[in-house]
Image (cartoon, rainbow over all chains, first blue to last red; front, side):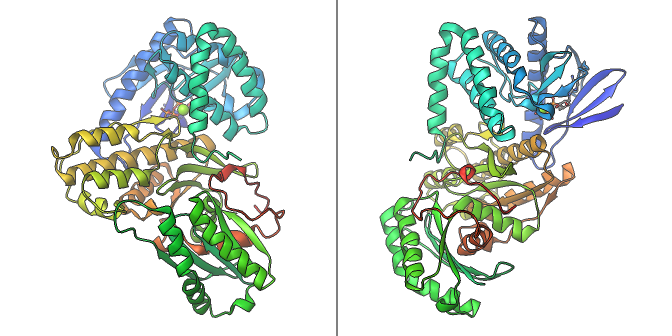
Length: 197
Length: 320
Ligand SMILES: Nc1ncnc2c1ncn2[C@@H]1O[C@H](COP(=O)(O)OP(=O)(O)OP(=O)(O)O)[C@@H](O)[C@H]1O
Ligand SMILES: [Mg+2]
């Protein structure tokens, strides 16, 4: 078993070509809270990844959830979009995110580190903060987070990348776009200390 | 050279002096409202009234006179307009009277720079937590970019609002910390984290419904554990996302020892560096404005005016 990555919450290992995601105990949190969070996120991540994979969304194939709560999944040979960012991929990201949303799922953490580029495809990972919802407000929250993740991590390309993303997402979502957009605008103006003059 | 910095974004009026290498003095006075939260006009009045004596004592502890000051720096925002006006007009007055340049400083960047000076961390993630501000910031491409923030109220405001429900006077942070030490039962509050953002409004509503039912100590304990875990988790996400290996916690809420302990434990576990800041430099203070003014000395001149909604990420940073 070799460690391939240490994320924010999890350590990732590779064994016999399979990826194992282990949400480690966080020593800064009290036990009750830490256990509750890890158990619910592991279960949620596994279930949602399974649902996505079965529906044909590009995501690693989940294999099993063991009794320790570790998730076993297919290895995606590629790189995180954050490490070699190109706005060329944003059309694919938009297709994927709308497919997810139309399944009634919100990702909850759509950063470019949670998108793996492999063989010309973009795979979505890391469903620990995902949940079931079809509300426009929750969908808008995904768009808001993605927009901010682009602006803060890839500032030079953020504008073009987001434009590409949103025009495709708009096309995909059709009639449902309008309420999502209005919530998105809301979030942006609510954002504290927005320089208004 | 000597730089005198003035801070007045909220209820603290502070004056600090630096020579660019060290902080020579850091004096302040904080307006304490008799009842409830901060009253803008009262706070501003306090600042005008206190300005002369605080400037005087800052000069005395630094061992210099006003004539020796080479540059003035004022905090332009973000903050409360009437409070900002007090600091800015005092600064502009001194700059004209003594014919010395004046520079405007972003308050949040002041917190960041004094944190970097005191910890020696070159490229940290900064968790900035105060009454109105809750941001997770790091340096990227000539900016301090905000990676995470509150989607509703600032963490200090949340503590004060819960404090009011429990009958604790403003500011409630210290008393909540004291009470939390007597906590026995952890009550599961809503835990809302969205990417690197946090949201506190659910907690406020939740607490409203359990006031009088649960022990005050348990409410305070659970509040701290929940809120601080969210903030540390969001900070850790930012560290992982940006590949940064040190953390600074600053702002008024950084005076809380449980929050610092959590920061320290999180960093220890991920092999990152953490150093708690001295309380003298976590709360609003003039030294951070003076020192940031020093760093920004050679940046292009901008108009000196209060900017209540001055965002951290609009300032171009050329001195790093
Ligand atoms: N199936 C996979 N195949 C190949 N690499 C993977 C796979 N899953 C994850 N990785 C790698 O591990 C990194 C971290 O994974 P992941 O985002 O799931 O964990 P995390 O960020 O710790 O999770 P969380 O955000 O819930 O804390 C990814 O950025 C990626 O580089
Ligand atoms: Mg991740």
